Image (tube, rainbow, N blue to C red; front, side, top):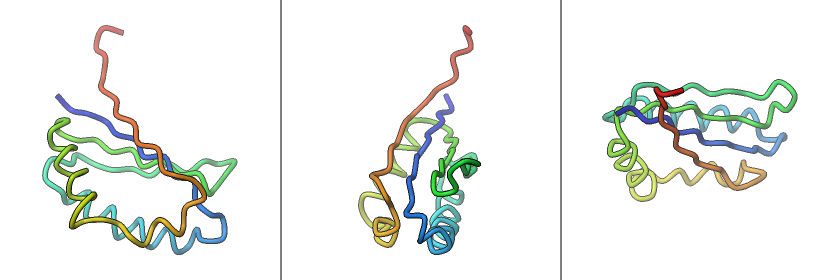
Length: 98
């Protein structure tokens, strides 16, 4: 079953250009990762430093392999200094009964 993950990012407003460069590189890797069905980035109209990466994965298992990669050899070391708050990761699945 497909799974959707959202990664909410609160960025330092002074680093948005650098954040865009970093995220473009990182999300190119994410989009090419096995099991990724797509990633969109949503930017808050009222707060351009508030972004949400909306990811769709073939399964929770594919997502878990990706998170393990990001915690190890694929760690993103240049994003931390650009953040104003810790990222928030949430997983969702479709409820067909609603």
